[in-house]
Length: 307
Ligand code: ADE
Figure: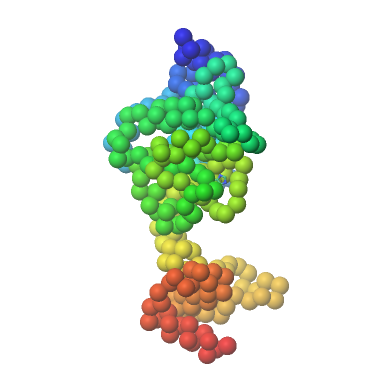
């Protein structure tokens, strides 16, 4: 009976024209960006259309990564899912994103997903039941080994590029966004790990989930040219070398001569040397953890002699 009521309520929601719409048959919102030739063009010359479809199972056989986000603020993902790299990964079918509205799993007409903390104190705590029901629903149909559940929390392990590469290999990543003063502590055992995007406290996990999704989407096949992710910051434990484009001189600042020499080997060495110098100056922690190769040691010595 309650189930019918919930379905009915969802059906009553008017079409908002927003990319996130609620489906009327399941308690979840699934957003699929579809490539629709001739529909409309964005500034990148691609055609995008947002469609919402009913949840479907059986994607295990497709070599596609699926990310489910459990949130109480699904509307925050509308424009994010249209950002170029994420939209391209979805369009190229290497990524499927599902935004699950936790509130849709809360019973009663008020759909309370939070309550005051036992023992007193300020703020509200997110209740177990809606979060765990939403989690169970989005796990439904998956092989256990395919899933990896992450809770976004300032108390989590700091997020790194290495972790992004690791997560990009999972078949089904589930991101749980906390809110209010936190999640009921009994929710944590349902997750495989907690991740923090930095030592500061956000209002909720949604921005952190977007950071993680963006960093993963650009690593998926077909998102970017492979070389552009291989040479960037953190991939070899160093910051990326400085880049320049036209004009050759801007307000008195000239592009280093070597980059205009056409000598590829010289350019490679210069870039590596710049990476080392930049990392040593800006991120001494990364530099200390980096094991210098013989070539890198010589390049640093040369830089010191040139000073
Ligand atoms: N939620 C609130 N703050 C956060 C942070 N720093 N990282 C991940 N999730 C969060």
